[in-house]
Image (cartoon, rainbow, N blue to C red; front, side, top):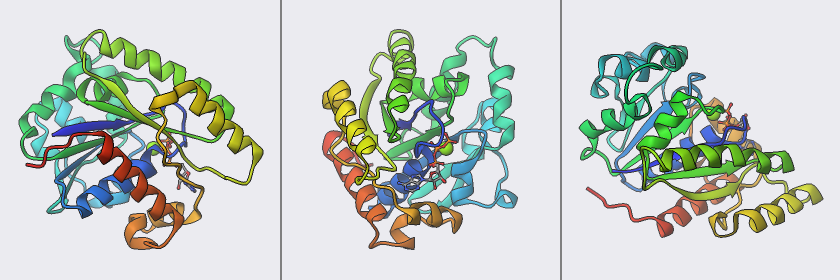
Length: 254
Ligand SMILES: Nc1ncnc2c1ncn2[C@@H]1O[C@H](COP(=O)(O)OP(=O)(O)OP(=O)(O)O)[C@@H](O)[C@H]1O
Ligand SMILES: [Mg+2]
C-alpha cells in the first residue's frame, strides 16, 4: 500500500478538494483506495458519507487500537476511515503516550495488504495528528494557494517534515507541490507561480489546478468533479494531477 498525505498548515488551500478528487480518480481507475480523514472538521468524510451513516471514526481506531472497525465502504474500490470533532481529543489524550507520533503508522500495518493506495487528508495545523500522518506515509503532496504568504507558510511544514524524517520516518519525502485555485489572468498568480517554481524547483509539479467554481459545487452534492462535471477545467486539472503523480511514483497494484 503506497501512502500519501495531503498537507499544508495554511487553511483553505484545497487539501480536502484534492484528497477527494484524487481518491475518486484513482478508485475510478480500479485502484483499491483507503481514504483517511485526519481533520476533526470532517470535511473529507462529509464528501463521502452523511454523518448519520457514520459509526466508528478514526478517534475510535486510536482509542481501541483497531482501524478495521472504523472502515466504511463507499464502493468496491473506495473505503474511508471518517473523522468527526472527537478526533481533536487525540491531541490531548495521547500526548504523553510513548510512540505517540506513530499511532497511525502502527494501525495501518493491519491493512497494509488490503489496498493499493492510501490517501490521508490533514488539518491546517501541525498537530500531533498531522505528525502522525507524516510518520505513516511514503510521500507528502502539498497544495499551494495562489498568494505569496502561502509560500512562506510551507517553510513550517518543511521543518516538520525534516523532523519526522530525522526521527521516525527516514524515507519520508515531499512527492510534489502544486498550485491550486489559480487565476491565470492575474499578475499576482503569475508571480506566485514563478516564485514557487524558483524556490521549490524540482518539487513543483507541472499541473496547476485552476480556479473552477464547479469544484466547490461538486462537493456540496457529495460528487467528485469527474461525475459532477466531467468536461470542466477542474476535471481536466485533477486528472492531469493524478496522472502526473502516477508518472512519478511506483504504485504496485495488489
Ligand atoms: N480550484 C478551486 N477552484 C475553486 N474553488 C476551490 C478550488 N479548490 C478549492 N476550492 C474551494 O475552496 C475552499 C477551500 O478548499 P478546501 O476545503 O479543499 O481547502 P482545505 O485546504 O482542505 O481547507 P482546510 O485547511 O480548512 O482543511 C472550498 O470551498 C473549496 O470548494
Ligand atoms: Mg480540509
